[in-house]
Image (cartoon, helix red, strand yellow):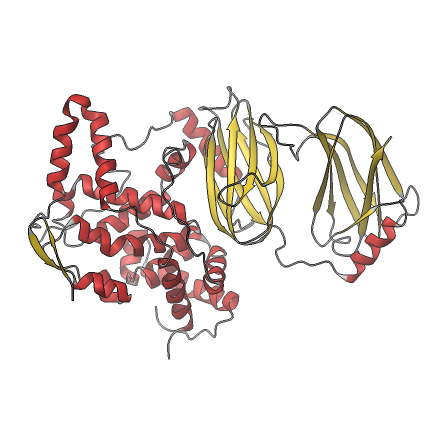
Length: 335
Length: 194
């Protein structure tokens, strides 16, 4: 009988092989020539390329030669493969990497770390459709803006925010909703203080991938909406952030919840990033824990004054008693 | 059977036909004389898939494997003399994958500034999505062991040697990984000695 696990892996391999598009050995030759040219200088580049071309010919192997360990970190490099960060920056990278935590405790779908630059981008492919929490850490000085865009091209922004760099980093946390299986693009833009010296790390953590709203939270969201005229109901099968772009002026944010447990509400006024994207991590206007079973002070109102081209976000995090049971609702209207 | 000329010599390329059929022999039966192009053609795709399934990131896998071949080419006179050149490339690729190179390369956008050559692909089928999602839930060591054992066809002793652990540890990783994969994929675990 065929081993079912091996069979599934073989099928996955065969499926993945269809997607492989090798750049080709000629691209290898071009890369090696280019790197050797960097070392040798323009005057000797042609000669080195000739040697490289000669090296492309089949060379009879020495009988019995045994491959060494091929430890890439130990191999003497014949040419500069990459610019290396300085030791202080590497140390910051180590701190940023450690900030990601233990995968066994909080598994992530994708994570990486590195040095902040003014124009970092990362194409993250094969991300299944669903909702993710993006945790972004920055170690050092300055600030960095992050924008997450959908697919391989286009300007469909899924999330945006800023992270402040510090020796003991506190993460910027964004909710990213991947509409279909495929690519995400991460853009990270450090300011002058951060670029080249500060280190970052980020991870995408699946946010309750299979949860759908249960009947209790759906009913309580409706009940909460009945407390506010024209309110939008929101369920609590997972923590949610709602956002609404707004113009300049005075606004009144109102929200209410019903059901068991407690919801931690955070209302933020969103900033605008340097590229014009509305951030979803702005200044905190109000942070309050609200017991949803209480009939007293059933609704909460927050007056906010905004400049032009702003936005308001409301995040509600449920405790265990409220998860998928309580519901909430909100309105945002001119004050 | 197909023949073609490289550098004035005719090279039998049974290996490439076998590779196209996806047979295991294709990954080990390189014909002599060994040329860089043959090695690249026979092994680039398989190495990329192994690292793709480990990372979950196709572009990262492409970049790492291409870099490993660049390093092989840069010292081809030496590498081509080894008993197992593809083993050397595989080891470099995995070391790069797990090393600082990958992070700094990514961080400094070294390759990302190059024109992207990846063409549009059909995208993964549902079974591959499920397998990749299940692999992503494995701890890194278990995932690495699964890929090396079942996709790179390394033996348990070979994996133990490269990971610097006892063979029993590798067997334990594989056992736990198989249990998790069987659960996630809804497969009937047909236990076999790894």
